[in-house]
Amino acid sequence: MFLMNDDQRAIRRKLRILSYAAEIGSVVKTCRYFGIGRASFYRWRAAYLEHGEAGLIDNPPIPKWHANRTAPEIEEKVVYLRKKYHLGPIRISWYMARYHEIKISDAGVYRILKRNGLNRLPHGTRTRKVHTKRYNKQVPVAR
Image (tube, rainbow, N blue to C red; front, side):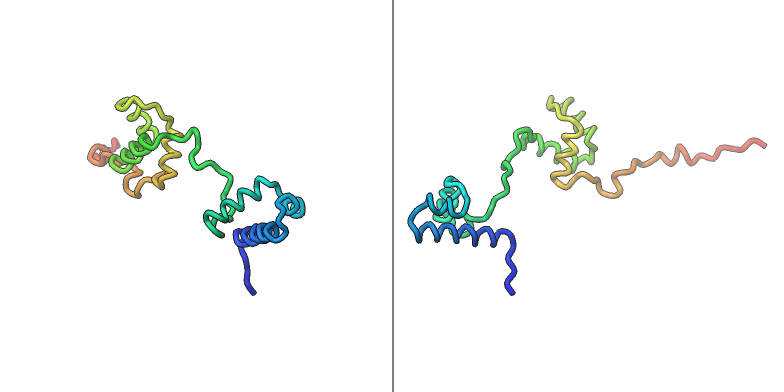
C-alpha cells in the first residue's frame, strides 16, 4: 500500500483541480465545483507552469524575515563575542552598549545565541574558578 504525506495529498488534489479545469474549459465552474477561490486557482496554475509539481507544495504562511528581528551585523557581533570571549547575555549587552553604542537587551542577546545554537557555554567555561590559594589557607582552631 502506498502511503502519502500531506504535501503529496495537496499536490494530488491541486493537480486534479487543474486537470478538471483544462478538461471542461471553465475556471469559474471548476472553482465553484471544488469550493476554492479563483485567486487560489490562478496562483496554483502559475506555480505549476513555472515550477511543475514542486510549485504546488503548500508553503507555511509565515514571513521570511520578522520585522523586529535584530540586524545581521549585530547578530554577527554577538556571536563573535560569545565564541571568542565566552561572555553571557548580560555582559554582551553591556559590552555592545559601552564599546559599540548598540543598545540591545540581554533577552535579545539570549534569543540570538539560542537561534545560533550558542545558548549554552562549553562545559568548563560555565563555572568560575575560585581562587584556591586564598581559600585553602588553614585557619588554626582555638582550643
